[in-house]
Image (cartoon, rainbow, N blue to C red; front, top):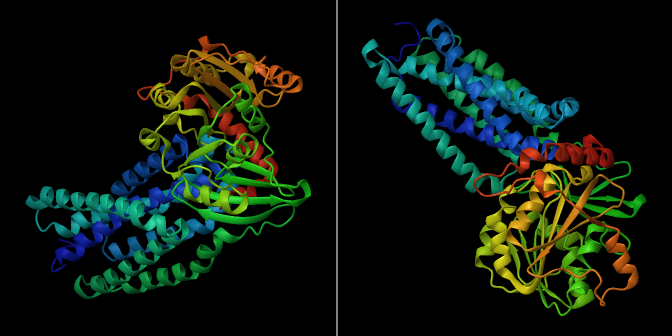
Length: 517
């Protein structure tokens, strides 16, 4: 037995330490997505990067921790946890620099390298706790299996509880940076308690001194860690009117007086824009959708899935007197639309995930605007045969589904665009596709689908309106795509180039520094 043997070390204290560090691993992993999301979004690639880095870190931690535990004579758990705490407190401070440095690597490589640099060190150290705890809990060779099983069971249970507490309670109430700072301070406290115990009970004469030095370093990092997320003041051409973290992203209202425009963004995605002077929407695709009641007169009721800044609801009400229900998953976006873009509900204003909410809606609707596919990550579950079938069930016989989708045209042969067209056609017998900006390959594509054919020569359209629409009518080669279902939906993978392009556009508009929280 060496100096790190359990001796009289309390099992309750040891298991509590393992439980809390197990919870810390999951908290850091989950918060990692929120630290990276404002720059790289919350796509599958960001989640894959964080999960992979966590697994790499735990593997390294188990390996190094096991070797260290067998050789340690003068150090113990307190030093490891104190180091993990200090490295955790450096994450908020380092995030901006790391994200800006990895920007040239692109979406996938940038997300992975950022995750590696920011989270690998602290997670590796937390992974080392398990082998040390097994060593401390084992009094004889015959008890190794029982000790190892118990330690890792308690650690896993801690991870479960940490995930639930963060997702259900902490995160909705406390910001990601604040939670990360609180976690770092909690780990420092655990380290101090362990150091005192190790020095008194395990004869580690130097346990307290190195731990206290790390505590001092950690406390010295606090001002930078707490203030790191507020370093951008919106100087120069842009001014940040509002910034709020929600469960789904960093929602910002950004104003540029020089161009008379106000933007609504969520992470690295533009979801609304309006003129400051008159509040009118400035996105061309909205003009196309705004003509739908003219194509199908006598509309009285509409549904918007994906509120954005709320302009479409205003257009439908002010021009045509249509009552509109809205579904928006993010309460921060709904509040921003009301507070900064003049959105006023004319029907139900529902906050919740569309896939769940539309099951409870009562049709029929004469117009359904499906607008969840602009920039950033693709909510692929909202663009499947199953979802579109639900929406079709809410449409009246003469109703129209208007779906906005951002992609490349590539002469009508883009696989993602073709897959959307093929999927919509699987559910609706009639489909027309329009582009927002003529002559541009990267575009908003508006899919107009219905149970009846859409008449672009309708007498209710003026000559100018009909001509304007005809110029934007495009053909999409459906043979290049696949039908998207809940079981198989590769849309996010097919839209990698689109996500990169969209992020480049936003960086070009605002500068990379503004997009980093």
